[in-house]
Image (cartoon, rainbow, N blue to C red):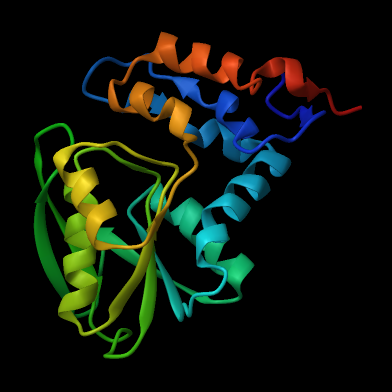
Length: 213
């Protein structure tokens, strides 16, 4: 299937079939959503779906988590007409910043940093990342934002797995993601074959695409 093809019928979540399977082993995410960003229609519809639950909410700023959260986050910010704030990995900020340690989905330790000269009490921030597995990275981002007195208006990401951390985020914050309920169990089980079968059941496969002329 041509990644630049347009959808003949745009069912909700049609763009999920553009995600690429992992080929690098168990230490990497099992699906790569970044392939769908190459398709302008898919990218736009993904952004629209992520913003849908927040249409009536007050959002002052969008923050993206290093690094893939920058792509979605900046796109959401532009669509909303709001500014964009980067939450960086350790060592990338050259200004006064606050730090928060976390454990990555691979089990490795990491540190996020957030500059100190933007957030203030009363600001409502939408935090964006590409995928939430264990929830450790997103929880660290939330802690940094709240430590500076700002309010987390919500969390937006392509998928939230129902791990302990993912459930905690869903229980405590408004959230949006792109995964239909029918496919959630396959996301949680990281079962690629079942996920692809679920896409077929929902008619979200390449049969719904036409090539750009």
